[in-house]
Structures are given as C-alpha cells and as structure tokens.
Length: 252
Image (cartoon, rainbow, N blue to C red; front, side):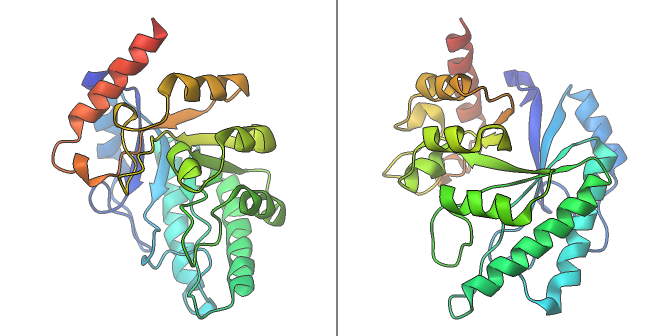
C-alpha cells in the first residue's frame, strides 16, 4: 500500500493479518516497527466479529465473559499501537430467538465496551451492515436508536457507502442526520451485478460526487477502501493502485 501512496491502513485483527483471541495477542513491537519502516500508521482496528464468529456483542450470558475478554485484548492492542479507533458491529440474533432480548444484550455489552475503551483513550465506532435476517443494526433508523440506547460519549458511527446504496438508503440522509457522530467511512462502490464491495473504477457510484457529498457535510474522518468482491482475491493490488490514481486526478 505504501508504494501506491497510501499513508494509513485499517488493521483487521484475524490470524490472516494479526493474531488476537480472548487470551492473548501477538507482540505489537514487531508490527509497530514494520509500520514505521513503511511510513504507515493504523487508522482503525477491526476485530474479527462477523457471523458465525463467537465474538458477538449480542451473545447470551454463557459467552459474555468470553466476548468481553476478546474485546479487552483488542483495546489493549489499540493502546499499544497508539490507535484511537476500534470498529465493531452490534451483532446478530438467531432467527428463532427474541430480537428484543438480543438488542438489549448488545446495548449493554457495547456500553460496557465503551466504558472500558474510554479508560485507554479509544473510541468505539460501529457499522450498520447489509440488511439480512438476524442482523441487529442495518438501517439509519437502527443506527439512531442504537446511539441513543447505548448513550456513550466515545461511541461513533462508521458508514459504508456501498452498503448504504445496496440497502436502498441514501448517503445524504446519514450525513444530515448523524452529523458529527460519523467518524469513519468504509469507502466502497456498488455494482448491482456483484455481491461484494467493488473498487471505485468498477462500480456505479461517482467518486467525485461521493467525495463532494462528504465535503458538503463537513466530514473530517478517514476513508477505508474495503474491496471485498471475489474478483480481487488473487490480484488485489491493481485495484488499490488505480483508485489512488483516480483520487490524485481529482486533486488536480
């Protein structure tokens, strides 16, 4: 990434990139040195928490300490790497289970996590996901309610430009409604024919118009290029290189 001109990375906390579990985490000194060697910094830590992972904020009491230990380790890593942002998803519920109870468990766990993270100077930012059965937060209305229910000063919102469109919503509505609560962006494009997030040169949204929308509403956070479509699995580098070229063209 560095040789394409990128200055920051989002660190996904999984064995593929960096080992973290409820009991320990990899040494951060080696990682810090590698980042310094590449002149890179970490904008956000993203723990592995998608279904069917066990690290679910809405989990039942039998696993709550397990989940707390996992996120404690994530906060420790953030503190050791001087990263001030930790991304979460509010979780999900089994289709035969009670959605209200799962929501309550998620709110309580998120409030605990915010309190714990605050003592280390870390902000918790949560992302509404693609609308699918069992997911607790996947709309603007859900986001507003979750922010209100958790009611923590260090809780913020991550928006995903591609997911918003795929969910049939509008980025402008998020920016108008949430204002300063948005502190991070998964900056992805959308293509109706593809199931995953695509690069800006491969989708239907306008890079220029989308950036102008963020500027209009005073967004000052980082943008993370999250390209998840399978077409990038074998050779991801060209997509990131081309996106950087498009951004530089817009900068003039």
